[in-house]
Image 1 (cartoon, rainbow, N blue to C red):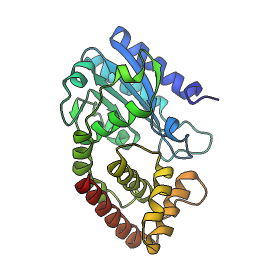
Image 2 (image 1 turned 180 degrees about the horizontal axis):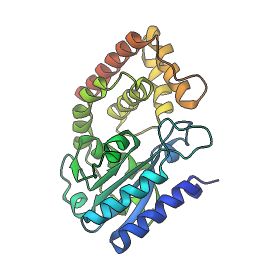
Image 3 (image 1 turned 90 degrees about the horizontal axis):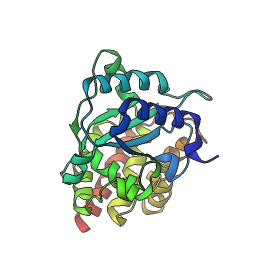
Length: 259
């Protein structure tokens, strides 16, 4: 089955059409579903572009239905997957500003805030520039024009600046999210070195032979946990995970300096 034939994806796409109406210019599927295949804990990542800012009623309607449609983290076997849905305004994308501004963002890590009454509002974030750049290379169009027409080309200067800007926050978020952070570091190292994007497990496979032996087993554990081959348990590996994260951060920084 093609990834875009997934019932949950189709339900989310129908939601975007219903709430955004004629303002919806296009939508695409990106992330793990297209870069390497959905893994046991992979989110479904959707990106949409609209031709006007969302109204307050659209924001609330989109949020309420996504809270119902998205699975909670961590996803249980056979249960709905977590959704990550981003909406960008065409005018904001056309401006080429850095960092990119998202008109609306839904992600499961924000569920508690949303259930407490918060509503997504427009925000700028360096990570959004990276997401647009990767989506333009890899995403599958679900609605509207091809991805190359829907999304702008993000300059390599903005991609590299975004990686510099997200590095500190990535390291500070290591505890409790070790697998994801370590694999994200590996993927950033690959991108900083090549200008291209890879799935997390593939980026780890690229990074492993470039690391000293003490770090190899730790990153391979993160890769295998992502693939569902081993338990995603870091209970007794906190110090080693931090050491690896710091080393990977240095690798990213060095690659950015030499690029």
